[in-house]
Image (cartoon, rainbow, N blue to C red; front, side, top):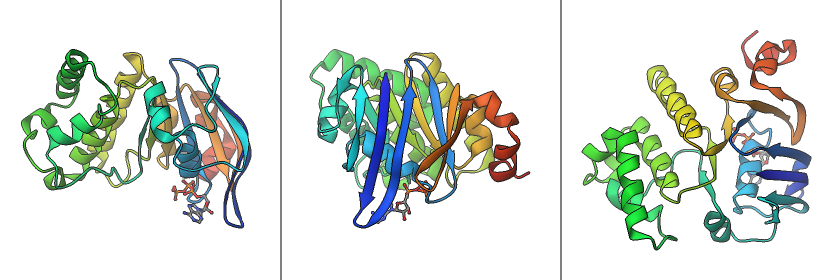
Length: 234
Ligand code: ATP
């Protein structure tokens, strides 16, 4: 579904991504783990078109999308839930969700997907007329994910969905990601919580200072001594 070939990204003179290649197959959950500043967020932002690479190619469904705008990529089926769950705080929950479907014209389909989002996140249905800014952190994460689902993505890119959430909520968010995937959406997940991410991932890549240093199935990496030492607390 997604293939990244020899991607390089710079911020001025900073060489943030140094020639990474990775693939995400149809139906998979693939996770990118790594320390702060390794380049995970930049990789995700480059895939969704928010940052331009200096070299390399991004292929989605067989099509070279390297030079497409972020909006064109949404239309093709790539949806991005940014780090820090940026919802529009003065807009209601419902308005935030409707925004997620702004490129769509199929009213009936949108209504059905709204129902689907409310079924998956009952708390959002309860709070649909409330300003998004009044939601708790966990609820805002659900809203950001719900909004991304409203574009009916083929590939859902999630940046640190567990960040700042209480352990019980973290478990709930990971259960939801697994369920979204089982219902047919391919997921690319960036996480600091390597343990949880590797448990739900089919495959994973480890990033260090702009490079991919290790890859394998989620299970393999959970058992890798290197990963245990660096990312799983011994
Ligand atoms: P985190 O989990 O903290 O987000 P990360 O693995 O996602 O870490 P990135 O945020 O992608 O890492 O950062 C990769 C590198 O690019 C870092 O060295 C960072 O300082 C640099 N970088 C990221 N964004 C910018 C920016 N807007 N301007 C300059 N440098 C940046």
